[in-house]
Length: 205
Image (tube, rainbow, N blue to C red; front, side):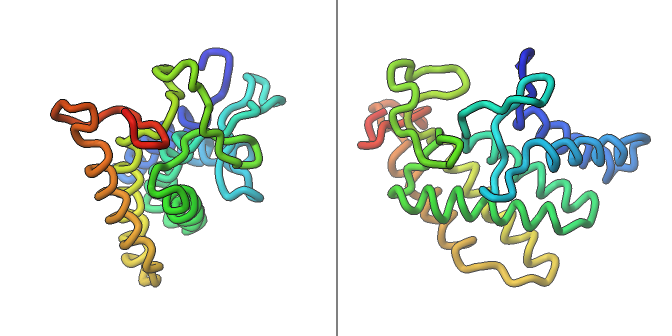
C-alpha cells in the first residue's frame, strides 16, 4: 500500500481510534474524526452504498476495482465508530453495506460470496483465475469471509436492537444460512481437517 491509500487501511485506523475514544485516550476522538472525514469524503460512494477500494497518494485517481473485503472491514469499523461517537450515520451505513454484501450478493449466489467487482459493482467471478493464490485478492470465494460476514450481520442486528430499532428478519436468517454454508462447503473440502481458504464457483477448493 506504499503507493496507494487503501480503504481497508483506513478502516483499521477507525477501529483503533474508536476503541481509544471509548477508553478516553488523549487525542483519540480527534484522530477518529479525521479518519472518518477522509472515509466520508474520499472512500464512501453514496450511490453504491459501499466504499471504493483505493486511491493514489494524491487522492486524484481511484482504482478500477471494487472489493468486498475492504467493505467487510469497513462495516466493522463503522459499527465501532457508531458506538464511540453515538452517531447513527455509521450504523446506517453498516446496515446498508451488510444488506448488499450478504442479503444481495451472497444470498443471490447460493451463499458463495463474490469477492471482486467492477466499479459498477458487477461481480468478476474470473478475477485472478490465472493467479489463484494472490496474496490479497485470491480467485474464488473466501470461506473465512462468509463466517466473518455472518458475525458482522449479527452484530448489525444487535446494534439496531440496542438502539431500540427494529432489525430486519434477514439479519438473523442470512447469517445462520451463511455460516452453515461456510461449514458445509468449506470444512474438509480438500479431504483434510480444517477450513479451506477459497473455493471455486462449483465448490472446488
